[in-house]
Image 1 (tube, protein in one colour):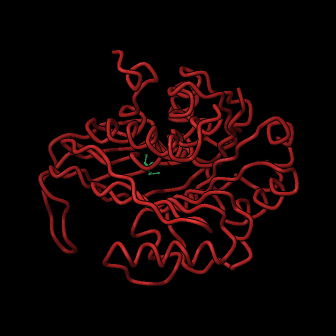
Image 2 (image 1 turned 60 degrees about the horizontal axis):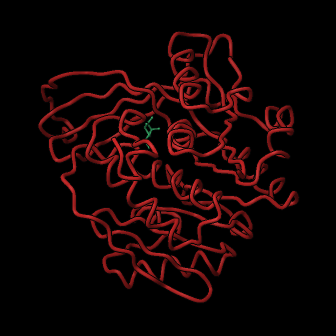
Length: 303
Ligand code: RIB
């Protein structure tokens, strides 16, 4: 099986369950608080493992209990964590998540050890890059590292998949050139293109703008509306199953990971998107980040 390497963040999520996310200046009561393994990078690595992919991760945690929990959770689904460095004197990354009854959330991250995912760490783990076929990255580690890996990965002929989250507006055009797949959601597409979007047609125009910058395939996730695939020769919408949404945390991470797993097994892009939609539509029916990721058996119709 082809190998997937995730380079990204690991956070311990502190999820507060409440009726409605507070507005600026408002104080509200929360109901419960739970600690759940998260971080966009770790969620993607965990999902790759749980969905049956051969995955490894490069990242950083602190020498604290959270760091141990985060690494152990990845190992429980067979992820190779030899590229995860423990940093002394820095706490593991944390995320404070307000989760309201509609299933929507708002997230504040404190990067902590994630800031130590440097070019030097990448060079130290060159073997993992050489051995993999797919590289998955997000924007919760220093952007300079993401840019460095993208160049390196391209020169080594790896397939690069970027989940541009949290979205950044001022990235130079040359960064996008040659990336195989990006997977923004609607708001991330607005930020990276600098255009407000309201209609499905706007998303096609926005995705085409990224193709013009050199991205080979753009997949825009559109929540209940499914997703949009745009490349040089097509623009195609994919519908998704209607489900009762409980928590959207990590649904995008689950989608990206499932897409990579399906591609690593040789599925074509349409089948890979259908597989990814199936996985993320299960994830949104459950609470938490890594706690919401389905297993391969569940996707295949088993328990
Ligand atoms: O994508 C969801 C993730 O974003 C959470 O797990 C949180 O840690 C933040 O990184």
